[in-house]
Length: 88
Image (cartoon, rainbow, N blue to C red; front, side, top):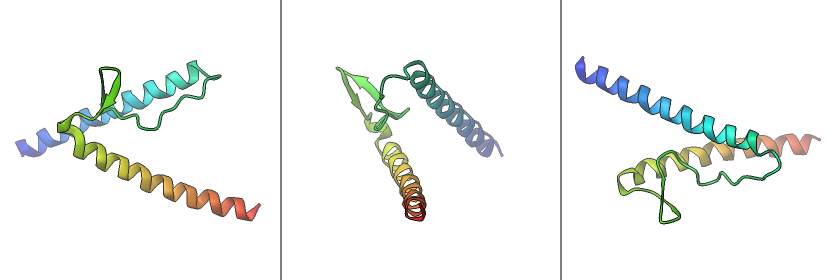
């Protein structure tokens, strides 16, 4: 029971961090409407080191899994876009 509670609290923290990260990205986009911001490659698990975005070794697998999930979601979105375009 304690282990499950700890897991649930850990997931709550992770969800909160994801929300905060995505919220900041959205706010930066709103505050800079005339700038085409590049957000591809952003991740709450990456960090800036010596002027470069890096994946800390301890988060490498999580980032890889996250990027695969985004690609799968994007492919589904593209399929829908392609379908919509052919109907036009």
